[in-house]
Amino acid sequence: MPHETRGADLLWSALKQGGVSRVFSLSGNHIMPVYDAAFGEGIEIIHVRHEAAALHMADAWARLTGEVGVALVTGGQGHTNAIAALPTTLAGEVPVLLLSGHAPLNEFGLGAFQETPQVEMAAPLCKAAWLAQTTEGLPADIAKAFRIARAGRPGPVHISLPTDVLEAKALPSLPEEAAYRPAAMPLSPETATAILAAIAVAKRPFLAAGPALNTPDGRRARAALEAALGLPIALMESPRGLGDPSLGAFAEMLAQADLVVLLGKQLDFTLRFGRAPAVEAKARWIVIDPDPRLQARAAQLLAGRIAFAALAAPLEAVAALAAAAAPHPETGWREALAEAIAHRPAEWGPLAEKSGGPIHPATLGAALARFVTPDTVLVADGGEIGQWMQACLRAPERVMNSIAGSIGAGIPFAIGARAARPAGRILAVMGDGTFGFHMAEFDTAVRHELPFVLVVGNDAKWNAEYQIQKRDYGANRTHGCELLPGTRYDQVVQALGGHGEFVENAEDLPAALERAFASGKPACVNVMIEGKAAPNLRRA
Image 1 (spheres, rainbow, N blue to C red):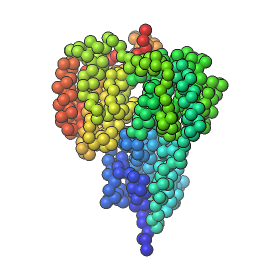
Image 2: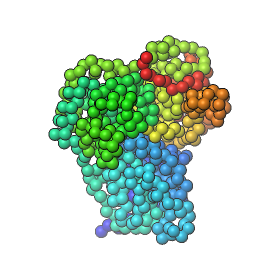
Image 3: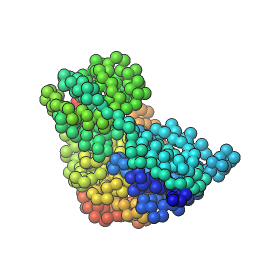
Image 4: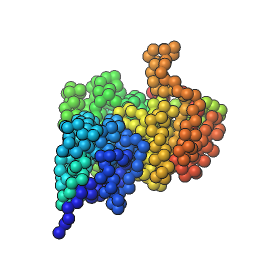
């Protein structure tokens, strides 16, 4: 006959049932029962230095594994620290579960220790958020959270865990594995046929995918559809939208398109809301989206220009289209699209061999490109330097700050990426301003033996803000963007147990990078760069 089990033990059992092997966490009073229950469960806790970093690591883990990432933090201020990372995860369409400790139910409303309206704070930034009510209901809560996080357009879910629910006992009863999986949202064969027919007769079709399709399964599905149609698919996950430098001069082609197909890509500011001149005013649209609310918003913005609208999950829709697609007949358009997306300015060529310093971002990009191997994950963070690296570097897998446009997640992203990819290279690039957000997480990487190489583009300023001030108000009205020149971020990393390199001249980059990768440690290559504006890749 089964014995009653603590809620904290039921929680771990439910996570294991959902396939969880790693949790990113910072301990605290309200989750001490959960930590105690972790002994012997076989789920590794990566113990971080800031709660937001835990969520960012779970985010990167989820993007690269396709699993639900799990972050575990304490209540009160631990929770409020963590939810600062939710906008990045929500905009990145990443299935993540944030578990936060909580004041006990029997004290809530009485002025309990760190009593905070946690659910109300998290709810606007999640697909769902709730307060666990019973010990016996905890496993079902976890299964429900996984189901919601993965359904339709993926995203974060939050559960607050009262201490008395964690400490009470109940008979163990775990949901079936199927309870963790979302209901299917397929694209019907008839709708897929109609959409493919519309693409086939369009002279200049343009396909755009949203961030949910930048997962292992999403990349395979996109590649299959690209191969079947012979048309490139623009992965739009950058806050720069039509100015995303990783997509070259694609904005020019979008402006000429007579049909725009949104494969789970929201119609929002990144597409200039579908308005001319960014998109031809007479262009027709196909909107495939799992969210009826966003379908309705697109219909309102496009005012009668929608040829087809379909409610379907992005991955299932792309798989259905790929299975039935045929090559698009307009070979000239296909070639023009590919050429535009691949476009990089000819003047960048000579910069690859430029010596001396400070180092031009394109020179840095050319040096780093030699270290991008077929098993490299690129983490791009920061303002202008992040845009330069997205233009210069093409890695098999990429983790970036998402359409939310926030910065600072790069170091936790790199740690989460290494946890997800024990082999291969993790190359992260960020600016000196960005480094300051989570520099202490190098301690986490050292303790857990999760090596990666971080390249810091050091121009002694918040360059994105500086460029905005310079452009909009004049060079004589820039202020509040200065950082100390020549700060030795490499020495900070060395002090935390990692490897550091300091580079002032371009010719010293290859050897410094070799040493950093060969060190086997979390490493920082601190590079003195020119503070250039992000590249604009529109052709003349």
